[in-house]
Image (cartoon, rainbow, N blue to C red; front, side, top):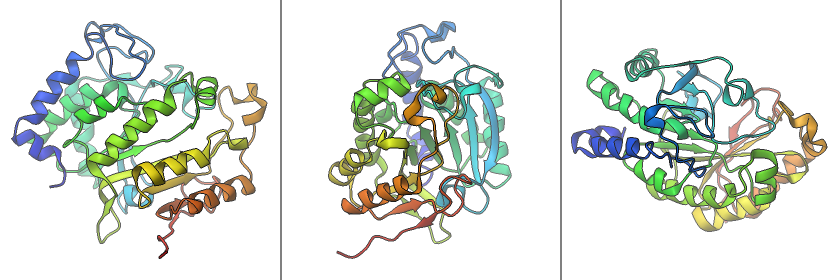
Amino acid sequence: MYPAYLEANINGKLDKIIKQAFSLMESCVLCPRKCKVNRLKDKRGFCKTGLKPKVYSFIAHHGEEPPISGKNGSGTIFFSNCNMHCVYCQNYEFSQEEKGGREVDSEELVKIMLELQKVGCHNLNFVTPTHVMPQILKALKLAIPKGLRIPLVYNTGGYELAQIIKLLDGIVDIYLPDMRYADADTAIKYSRAADYPEYNRQAMQEMHRQVGIPDIDEEGVIKGGVVIRHLILPNNISGTDAIMKFIAQELSEDSYISLMSQYMPCYKASQFKEINRRITYQEYEDAQKVMQKYGLYNGWIQESYGLDRFAGIHIKPKQVK
């Protein structure tokens, strides 16, 4: 049944999860940072977010992966602040420096969600939702009786706790996570998250368990499933081989992967010589070969090498072995 949250609302599961999610904010353990500040009293930890979510912008986004944007766009809500601290973040102004955006209450978030549905968006795409997951669910509960009927996309940097993702089972239809790093040294150096690889892999397994391989309809629009994003960084810093091996062996060779080439040396990247440049054509082609080495053929590659966000993406069908 799509979207899954309709059933969760009927059987009472959604109410139960909302209550549980907000209880986790009293001594916040929503993400691996486990800051344990009382966000119910508007205290702030690593993510610099208190009780109310802060929305930077919302749009009908036509630049996501083709099945997510579809013809009418993905109803994308960009939340300010983040539980990571990537030195090359292209959204650093609102994700790390708190510039722009404003706090919204539940009713205003409902209005945003319904407006995106009204303009024809195929889904609601929550960007950087980890630290505001309870507030999203509360708004969801209020939006359902007002007619909300489109699937949810959980668009995350991948620094997640598997037990938190487990709460979303039967509520979220589409997961759009990053698999950013394969080892702790690079994760701590570039995102201040040494344990990213460990928690990221556990979360990927839970997402895959819940929704599995994408269900794409006859119009090419995704209804449910996991699409894994892998951003290629210069000098193989992202650890593509180890990540693709994990996907193939621990998830599925049928997994859908968005191999991303649009890395830009933004924010503080100039302080790190090894990432202070765009990737080369050869680096991107090498990443494609790694995918194929592990039997991974489903997904999208970028022929434009980042000149436009997702221009030139096409599905590369899985080959018969």
